Amino acid sequence: MTLRSAILTRQPAIARGLLLIFAFTAWSLTGPAMIALVLLTLLFLTEVPAHRRQLGREPAMLLALGVLIVTALLAVRAAWLFPAIASAQWQGAWAWTAPFLFVVPAWWLRRDPEQVWPVLGAAALGLAFGILHKSDWSLTNQMLHGLRYDFGFANLGLAFIASVALVGMVLLRARIAGVRIAGRPRPWLGWTLWVLGLAGLLFVLVVTQSRGAAVGLAIAGMLYAVILRREQRRHGGRSARQARLALTAALLLMVLAGSLLWATRGRQMLDLRALTVGSQHALSYDDSASIGIRLNLAQLGLQVFATRPLLGFGPGTSTTEFLVPQRVVAVSDYQLANAPRASHLHSVLIETLTRFGLVGVLIAALLLAILVRAYRTLWSDPRAAPELRVFLTLAGVMLPLYCLYDFRLVNLDLRFFCILFLGILYSLQLARLDDPRKA
Image (tube, rainbow, N blue to C red; front, side, top):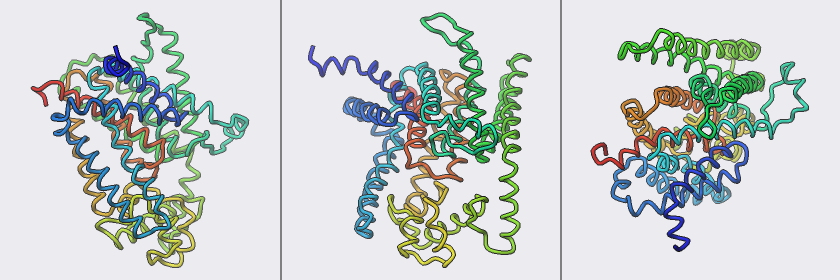
């Protein structure tokens, strides 16, 4: 047997191993994570010829190709308009296209829904390893006394990922507690992992002091209560004990969110004061009040979007780091003096408008339609575990909320999150390719 035939024969097993490596290293060892993703993609490309007819009709695949082409063309245009930042355009084209690689893990997960659980477990363990490895634990005493710390990550990015992981810990408690090793249940290990994971994630969320993550948890809790009520009315088969446990989980998420918001009440008062002063004068770029910074940047972004509303300024063109300081766009003296202090516009939506214009809005609308289709499949496919449906739904609401108040889509942490999370979501949709009756 040749090496090529051996690889082709063992492709599924190799892909499963690479998926686990990618999930574990995504937020701790980004070099190996990138290598695993590249190898997964190359393996996927070897599958395309045999499935080209089915994949040629798959909307997510067509959108990924379309985004690659459109982004590359806009990068060429921007490199011609702004030669000084041409290299940034090529980097931006790749960074904006990369999240659409979610079709790759979705492809390898489509045949075995149970593979989702070890992938999620590897991701959770990898996140924990990354926090332990990157943190400066000499600051522990200061953290316990109110120091806001990022644990070696970007503050808001880590808080978002931790909040999604916390939702998963609450919803998947029974599955974690029932962990098996070599086919034998190990409840003591499962409960230990669950308690330590829950405590660790709460500690991270308290120390990062992200109000956005707390709001996301609150919304997740309320939505979970709505889902519970809907499922109870539709099926009515849930036992009283199960219903109480599920309702307790929903209330727990809301209580945790309220506690986190209470812990950051000082920062909220600063924001309220900034808004009160801003109603009489211009909102400030004062670092102590993030609401003023975000509203200023949103106003600036909309002004830049209005300058070139159709195609924007290019995938690698930063408003705050290039357009404003280089006076490519006309802005007020106040924005000229203060906007360059920000590294970005703190919103994926606003950055999409400035870099891609209405073309970006069209791409976002198409992606949303594809994901809505995937969620319809998720909730109608009997192979999907009920707790996985709820987790993916709640996390799917928390992700766009995060994208409204921060911009890390082109950074590895959120990029890898989107590839992994959307890949899990879309795997059931791609599974229909293997069943002609459902395609």
